[in-house]
Structures are given as structure tokens and as C-alpha cells.
Figure (cartoon, rainbow, N blue to C red):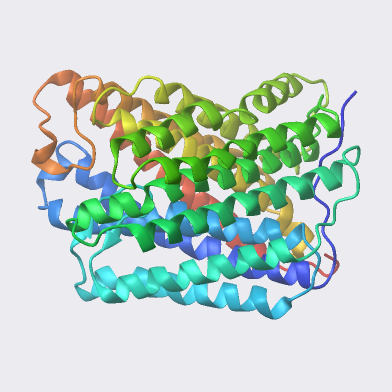
Length: 453
């Protein structure tokens, strides 16, 4: 028996708030796309020799990562939390969105006014400048307000046998993981020595909280997977009660994180290893079984309509990229480009799920349906390009090409290394086209509001 997990949308504040966060998320992707063009060109053989990219490469990488991962994911969390919670405390949601928007705009402008000094620490790379810290602080405060609003409003949850209630529980559990993220960050900030050099300081500052935040992203991705499967007429052979237990299992590993902080120092090898193991062994507890069942459900005789094909294409691409990212995690040895290959796969898997749900939501938020043909091709172009990108990185990583380098610093002196990074560059350019197509499709739909949403 197949079950229905389509997201339902209540009128009034939930829709208005979702639109606010959607606009912020799309703006972040546009900014990230502009910087990604420079990033790919700076690492592509032959092209990289034309202009001395290295100095600007790291500054562009900071903004690209923060926009495409941190702010885009944050904004989509705002969309889902707005749609799956009751409409109370409107002012708190508006304040959160405004603070995040101001921080985002400020962050995007800084590289063009000569502010650099980038630090390529994990999770949230930074530019060493007080204005950047203020921008990041505004976003953090806005995100915290969004989490608080989501958690203090009574959960619209009735029973584990109701699919809508189960999706709401998944959204709520993602907010709990986000709150744990902010608590871990605050604990680290208060207890971390200021004597470290800048890179080490920010590496330790975001290490624990960055790992916990991945549970939020994964929980929201799982909700999107279920929604996309149902909305595209794929069979979902999972009872709501089973989904509830899997979503609970998906967020359960974070309960051990206080133990990490209480038994090991923030700057210790033991704590770094503990959080790494947490993601390796806890991050897929729900994603693995749900992805297997959804893959099976895709082999169905239920043919998707023209309007449903973009949703199914997004689901297929997301499942594939997230799975490849997980497999590559097992192949990491040393500090090389296999690491970005792994997290690009996982991150793009989440992004594709969010893109697909954007297509699903647009006509339900009062906009026109996305162009079905272009929207159908876009996930395959973006996902296919990213697959080439990460496989090229993984291939080159096997030959020792280091991560977070550009130009001659990459040391590409062997044909296999050159071919791998050329594949990376070509895949990256294809992915950029796919990302731009998503923006074009979404904006075009938003410019054409329907009379009866």
C-alpha cells in the first residue's frame, strides 16, 4: 500500500512567511552562483593560467559556501517551519527574516569593497573583518529567533498514524536539532580560548555545532523526499508510524553531544573525532532506509504528468547525489579533494530536494506553475553536472590533489590529475548552468502570479 505525504499549506501567515524565506533563499543562490563561476574558472586547467586567481579565489569561496550552504539551507528551513507550524507570533518570524536579509546583503557586498582576509575553516568560512562578523551575527540572531518561534508554538501533531502530523513532527525535530546547534555554538564561544590563531579559532568554533546542524538539514531533506515522492505519484511503501520512528531515529544521535562537551576539551583531538564519528554512524540512520524504500517506489507504473515530472526528476537526482556523497565519505584518506567531493554530493543532494519542493510550492504559494519542460530538465542538468564535478574531484583526490587550492598551487603535473580536474571543471560549469536554470524557472514563475493560488 502506498501512503500520501504531500505537504498541505494553510492560508494566511504561513504562506506569507514562506514567501519571505523563499525570496531570501533564491537571493542567496543567485549570489552563490555568481561567485561559483569564478571558483570553477580558477581551478580549470588552461583557463586558470590566464588571470592570477589565487588571492580572490578564497574570498569568493567564503561567500559562495556561506550563501549556497548556510543561508540557502537556513532560508529553506524557514519555509518549512513556517508551513508546518501554527501562525502565531508573526512579528517574531518577520524580525528573523529581516535580520537574516540584512546580514546576507552585507555579506555579499563585502568582497566588492576590498574586504578579504579569508579563512577557509570548515562549515562557515569567514572573512576577517568586523563588518563580516556583524553580518554573520545578525544572521545567527535571526536564525535563533526563527528556531525559538518554531519551538514555542504548540506542535500541530495529533497522532503517528496521520501522514501530515508525521511531516510536522519531522519539521519540529529538525528545529530541535537546530536549537542544539545554537546551544553547542554558544557553549563553544564562551569556553574557547582566544589565544588560538584565527584559523584554528574558527575551526574549533564551528566544528561541533556544524556537525549537529547537519541533522537539521537531513531531517528537512527527508521531509522533502517524502513530499516529492507522493506529489510525483511514486509509491511510498512506508506507514506513517514507521516514518515517525525513522524521523525520531534520525535526530536521536544528537542526545550524545552534551557528553562530548563534558568529557573532552573543545580543542582536543578526541572531540573532533567524536563529532566525525557521530556523522559517520548517526547521519544515515533515517536517510538510508527511507532512500531505499523511495528508490523502490520509483519503479512504479504510475506515470508522472507533465507538471509532476520536475518533482520526480528532483527526487531521483537528490537520492542519487546524496547516496554518492555518502559512499565517497568512506573513501576519504588524508586531506585532499575527496573531502569536497563527499560533502558536495551530500550538500547537492539536500539542495536538489529543496529545489524540487520549491517547484511543488510555487503554484501553492500563489505563483504560476514552473515551466514543466525546463523544470524537468533542470534537476538532471544540475545533478549531472555536480555528479561529474564530484567524480572528477574524487578521481583527482586519489592522486593527492589538495583541497582549497587554486591555479598552480594545485600541482597538476600528471595527465590523470589534469583529466580529473578538467572533468571537475566541465561538471562544475554544467552544474552552474543547471543552477541558473533553477533561478530562471523559479523567478519566471514568481513573476506570473495566478488568480487563484
